[in-house]
Image (cartoon, rainbow, N blue to C red; front, side, top):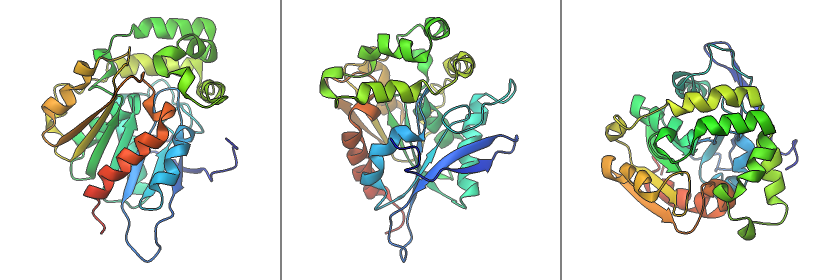
Amino acid sequence: MNANRWEMQHFMTSDGLNLAYVVDDYTDRWKPSDTVILVHAAMGSSRRFYAWVPHLARDFRVVRLDMRGHGESQIPGPEQLSSRDLVRDVVELADHLACATFHIAGSSAGAVVSQKVAIDHPDRVATLAVFAAAPGIKHGNQDHAQWVARIGERGVAAFLRETIGDRMDARSVEPGFIDWFINESARTSVELLARFVPMMRGFDVMDEISRIACPTLAVVPGADPIHRVDQYRVLADKIKDCEFMVYEGLPHNITDSVPDRCAQDLKKFLLKHRRSQ
């Protein structure tokens, strides 16, 4: 995508980090509108939600955050990368935008962050949408220490090219998309990932997931080698108000490989639960 297509904005976190975000808002100016905050996956950025914007931004103010260390956001120092920091960033962004309540949707690691935001800030979160995420990545089938080692040895781009079949069906996406996806992901610092992945490995909300009180949409890939469907299904079992959907036959990165389908399902869910009518 053209780097100048979106106007990137920035805010300063309470611990002094400069974070980037984009606001896409094509709602009617004379009507109140709900805000939905999108939180991307590891090795991602706000740019990876580009195809979601046309589906959502006519009815909702869409806010796309670059998590700390990703995209255009500043790389955190040694004491600035924890699950608590990632959750606080979302809430502080909402505060920065004077948004008392918001919807939140996340992809993979970003969805684990989103779950914790809903757990810790039930008064702020109107709805939660979780794409390709169990209550913590440690509940999956992958050796994340091996991931970090391979990324360190080969680099992000080579690692992703070697494991692309775990993420998407290359036969079903547009020509050139795989290269774009890999190039975008490779913008992430190897050093940052060496800290980020182990931190996320310890980010476990399994014991807290039943505290999520807001309406929740959980969308999971049915052929994911990273998590089995039964590992995802704990969301439906433990969250009282959970709409559970399986995209049969798809590997992990559904938010990238079938973005229109994801965004359309999210829009239907949000329209049922939006607060400004």
